[in-house]
Each structure stands twice: as structure tokens, then as C-alpha cells.
Length: 214
Image (cartoon, rainbow, N blue to C red; front, side, top):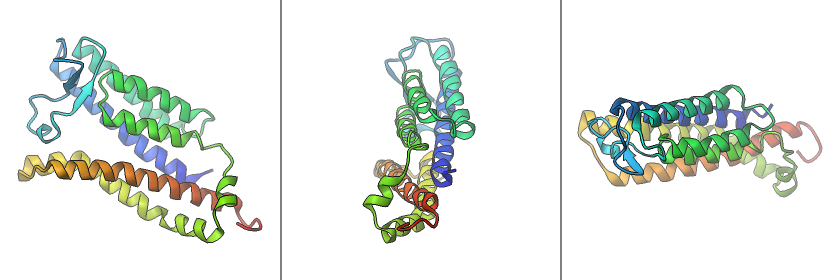
């Protein structure tokens, strides 16, 4: 079992699902009304989410109650699949497909995008990792593998700093900085990529075991 890749997909896929559910709850709380536009705030009157623009989402459904219910449903399925069914053969494709309705039905803007990237990484769960052994030296793989826990920890910290960190700083301490939000977004994508890269190297090293050249 590719423990590093699985840990990435289950951890961050689970977070994506939870954030999608949170967006859906905001839409449900607004009731049986039409959204203000194709893109709308999930929590328009929430002081807690004001620093995040009310948590913007997109929906092609012309009713916020229905949008919220659908967002919660799709995000819950994404969460369950990422955490408990990620080992299945086509789990990555399922996660990528679920990201589309999550985006179109009120699950947020960035969560579905991140969810699609996580699904793309999951498509490599059952692929042979021979590329890593043929294109990277044992030393390079060992170095990347050793960095995986640090990248993984930094990625978790960055994601938590974005949510609920930014909202907590704004609500309790009055700290609101748009530059911080953009920096965290860049770090979220960047550390996710580095964690995936190091994870594949770590799993490749484990897969090779004591084979020559491993």
C-alpha cells in the first residue's frame, strides 16, 4: 500500500469535503431564495467569514436551499470516498468527477479545484512507479522521501492557517490582510504539489524495497 500517497489523498481530500459541506450549510441557512448571481457568498451576513468575502461559491441551481443540500451531499460523498474508498482502482477518477458538481452546486470555488488536483494524484495510486526509479537516482529519491513528512506537515499547517485560521484572526483579533490570503493560497497549492512529489518518491522507494538500484 502506498502509505504516503494515501495519506495525502485521504487527509486533504477529507478537508476539501468538509469545506464543501461548510459552504453548503451557508447556502442552506439562507433559505428558499434565489442566489444573487452565478457566484454568490455562502455566508453573506457572517462576521466570522467576512475576511474571506463571505465564502464565495458558484451554482447553476437557481435556489440556495437546493444548492446547499446538493453541495452537502456531493461534498459528503467526496469526503467518504477520499477517506474510506481511496484504495479502489478508479478512486482518482471518481474524485475528479465529483469535483465538477461540487464546483457547480455551491461547494465553493477553490475547494473543488483542489479536490480535482487531489483526484488527479489519486489516479496514480495503482500505476507502477518505475519512472521514479529510472529517472531519479537513489540519492534523489531518498532525499525527497526524507522531506515528505516536512512537506506534509507544512501543507497541513498552511491549509489550517487558511481555514479556519484567516477567519479566526479576523474575528477574534481584527487582523485582516488580503496579501496573507493570497500568500496562503499559493502555499496551499505549492505544498500540496511538493507533498505529492515527495510522496511518490517515498512510495517508489518503499515499493522497490531491496531491489538493485533502489
